[in-house]
Amino acid sequence: MDLPSPSPPAVAVSPPPVRLVRPDGPCVPLIFASPHSGAHYSADFLAEARLDPVALRRSEDSFVDELFAAAPSFGAPLLTATFPRVFCDANREPWELDPAMFDGPLPEWVNSASPRVGAGLGTIARVVATGEPVYSHKLPFAEAEARVRGCWQPYHAALSELIAETRARFGYCLLLDCHSMPTHPVQSAAPADFVLGDAHGTSCAPRATRLVEDALAGFGYRIRRNDPYAGGYVTRHYGHPREGVHVLQIEIARRLYMDEARVERAPGMAGLQRNLRHFVACLAATDWSFLAP
Image (cartoon, rainbow, N blue to C red):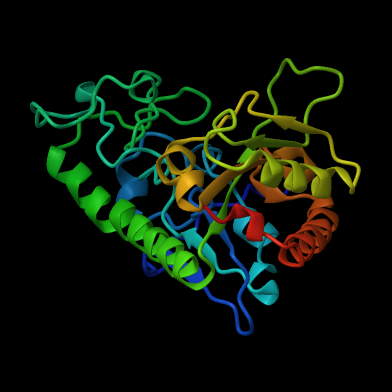
């Protein structure tokens, strides 16, 4: 019996770089954001990439925006990138670029020495999650500039505005930076279902991390902290508990809800989405006033 073909990326008319769904009713001091679930691949990008569409999609945090779609129903805005991570990574500094990717010298102010650049996973990725090169040719720096200004900057402008609005309303906020993690070939007998990253206790009040951990554990999930994901640029850049801004990164095991090879929703998607709806409701009902500086 022939199997259906894997899901290709969407290549319709380009949407705005970010999608923001605001609450209809009363607000809570929570923000949910997904910088890596974008799945719009332009025809031009697909044409210049050396990899097939499904290989490109495996770098996504596919469907994470859907998993947290209930957030606005409970008073929390949901911000998502529509552009794919492999095109421009919003969870990096704006100018983490690999000189080997470009056809001329980069400006001196570019960060070309970060560990992420060394791994090929800077703001403009050199490789996909499986380590394969994205391009067969070098890019002009103007291409990086266009992506940073057209994708990265709008995402962070929207995120900064949400944080400022929430702080102005409540005096503090908790940003949940939502991601997914792939299954690794070698894992322990009891791999984590969720990894919470608070930059080793520096980006979020320990009590808040514990409350989130307890809420997820209540569904029977296995939780780990900061191992192997302690938080990326968003967590470390925006997380300033002394100023009332707390950021916690949430990594969800993809095996819980998707076919990782085919980049498709699996039968577990509905149950996880239902549990996360209850999880968001629990957080929305929590008294977060202890987050105030």
